[in-house]
Length: 256
Length: 260
Ligand SMILES: Nc1ncnc2c1ncn2[C@@H]1O[C@H](COP(=O)(O)OP(=O)(O)OP(=O)(O)O)[C@@H](O)[C@H]1O
Ligand SMILES: [Mg+2]
Image 1 (spheres, rainbow over the protein chains, first blue to last red):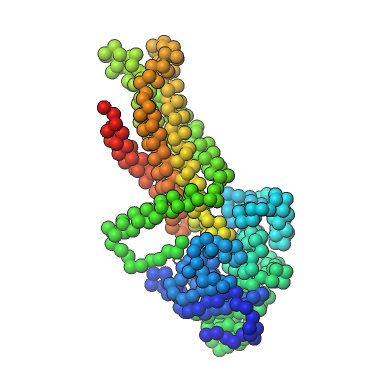
Image 2: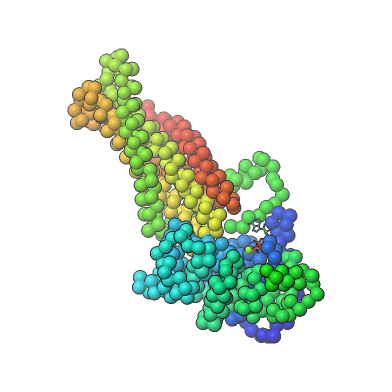
């Protein structure tokens, strides 16, 4: 099902082949094939419950696939041991759909957590500087000493992204970064995603329902329908079709 | 990590599946808790937390138990004109059974439930997954530290309870028999053997380990959804208390073998 890519010989950082995953009788992913090339932003579209979150959870090894192969930065995720998996995860950032901030820690401690635990040679000052750098990147410096419970949904989402960025991963997986946010914040997040791509040459998978976001950040778009990627390509290529399901998805988004 | 739902197994095999799961959980604890990198800072924080959380309640309960137990035992001893045995009777009762059991039950209620609820809500809101993906081993950071902290702190609390209970007993004896506190303590300490101290320590370590393990197991494996958190906290208390009683019976039998 691979669409020939005009990027040709570019290096693949994520390579998924014939991936299957079921929960009970529900066959969520039915033979997914997907490539992520170095330096690109790939948008994954699909309606609710089609298994988008499941897909990226399999990429970081939070869920195990039933069959198929998932290669991330050259390693087979479900074949390596736990220690190698942890060091692989250092290079893959994952921002959760629901932010998943640590409730018992302040924003500062949330951001410090991955850093102090994985880069033990950093001084206190360096850690503080890093924290401020990413917090500034998401525009939330003023929340430094607040608790997650005191933040709005959009702010939490941005802190969640900042916490992922702090380790400067090679690959970013964003799970619905703009869902439930106002249009202006959406624009800011889109800008942030593009900036991360340009500044750090990060390769990203962005899951979204939001076509404005898809258009703004996606170098390439893939649409998950009935458990497989039936359409991949540029935004225009994907939506230039007679497929009713794709058209409904498009129409609904813009009428909204 | 991955939840695999196969065909619904029958009741008996489900029980064995749970037992196997628990066994693996315990095994993972021993595999990970004692290998570097150590989570010393988090361990200290948990110890402090557990101690701090139960201190007030334990002080109160221990003291009252000391007073009441002494008061209620007096008439039976007075019948034989043996009220002078009160200090040693109370000392033995507190050290051997009352203090370990009281401390463990209170800890199962306070510590077990809060560990269950805390880890449960971290599971439900994907905070545990967030630790995984930021390359921290959440089992080591969350479970190992809490189980170790409970195993270390609850024995300390147990001896503290025994001491506070003795103070309660002293108060009661002092107001009734006018024994000096020196005489009270020397007569109660005289009757306590080395075996008593060892047996209580081992028992308290076992209780602490159990309470920490049960709380962590329930919370760490809590089901998704907010009702999962409540269930985890509740199951932590019920299972914890039940196991404490079972272990109490077994250890009493076991150490009875050494007493002649
Ligand atoms: N841990 C799990 N256990 C059982 N079923 C699950 C689990 N995770 C996901 N599912 C099921 O898999 C399906 C796909 O879930 P997923 O979260 O990937 O959807 P999604 O495409 O991300 O949807 P949304 O856009 O609403 O976030 C859902 O029907 C869900 O019920
Ligand atoms: Mg999702």
